[in-house]
Image 1 (cartoon, helix red, strand yellow):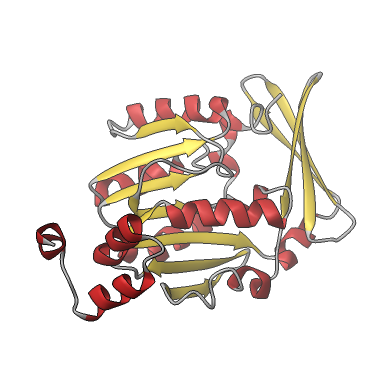
Image 2 (cartoon, one colour):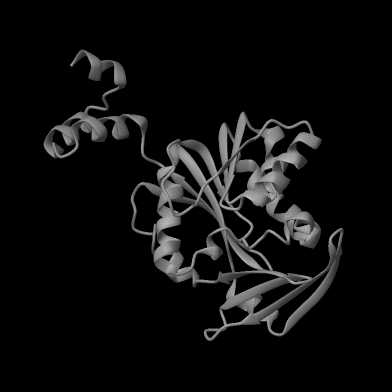
Length: 258
């Protein structure tokens, strides 16, 4: 059974409404154009940003969550393109904004997978595009020690348990309804380790970093220009030519003439 199968119907009700509103308020100034909600879950964030942008695509690995997401979007008369996708696989489209919020990267099984998902998200940015992502803080994950809660659902009581694993910055959640059970694991990584992925990249600009009660939120921009991407694509390896063209600030029209 997929991790969120049992949780999908009550997923949004289990969220902290105040923290979600704070997160939405923080990211709204950076929304524009075509947006991808990566790891969209029930589509809460996708629906929240849809009125402020040109278009929204939303993907998740869990088809049950996507079914819930589609129904909720239809109920609000919102046009959102939902599709199944594993964040550890490359995307075939680019966006003005990629959202990886509400613990998305924390679901990676290890840091190598985290890095792969992160790089895939960066590669999905158009020139000048913005990646908005968050990471659960270790201090928050530790609050799940010996956690247990029962939630009423249409299918019966759902028992939610959480246990910390050996490193204390990793938590395993289990969900049970009758004899059905699913589980998922979330891992926190230090800010230093995460920032190291993009700190020395001259094409990445950190627009904002904010610390919430439970998570760190980053807005980072891909500053590479369309001309630079175009030239690299067609002239990869010809670095002398690339540097010359960049020096004279060529545009696409002059490139065609050449």
